[in-house]
Length: 335
Image (cartoon, rainbow, N blue to C red; front, side, top):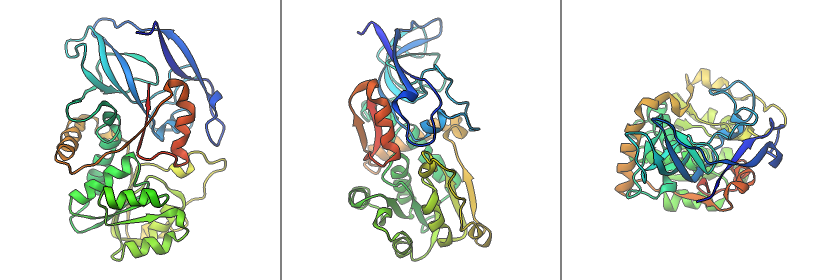
């Protein structure tokens, strides 16, 4: 075992645009010792999520920004090494908001024990972890899809979008994915079994999306925003629902993005747009784990991770892949 705890800390607030390495500092500190009612986790995989861009900024949000000098916030999975907690024992595989570091101490709040016999550890920070829970509650609770409806998902090859699209199929809907590039679109069709895939990089977004949705769109699961949202709005059917999970197209913008030009469709079609954060269903996470795990074990839910090597020193560079579309599947950093 290493004698130090390598940690990624926030060194300064970022300027608009891509995150530069000097936003973070990578430091070695002492390995923490758990106190009464606590346990220590050796972290093995860290989830890289688009929300991290917002967590390091000081704008108003759903959580306080990461403090300057604090360990970067992040979901991670690992094994319990030492425990003074009655519900967690050495060897338990766990997932939680442990931060971007090698070792973390926890009191067990919002920590989930995971079954590595069902799926490998890295999958528990992907489709069976927080991104999967977000997809589950965002589509089923906010989107409320009905059999026979058309569900469109942006960033459909990503961690959240790929699970949303598959759940839509499981619920008897017609699922259409929007993704960047022919490789990702082939993945949606050939691997995930979607009904149609639209390549937004092909230059014919409006025509291709209309052709893929001849009966209009009932549910649009939004991960991107910008031009894609504007293109979708006129195609929405009456009383359509738009779960708004992310707006990744604007996260690295150097100037404020323009507002939706087709907002009139919200009025004329009586659309419902609702933002969502997975914490809104914190008391129901067990339900999501149960259903996602069942579908996965039955072969009805396919999940792919893009696991990157390089350890914590690679964190700043790997994180930026999220905002350029450089990842293929859930982006995970191996510690």
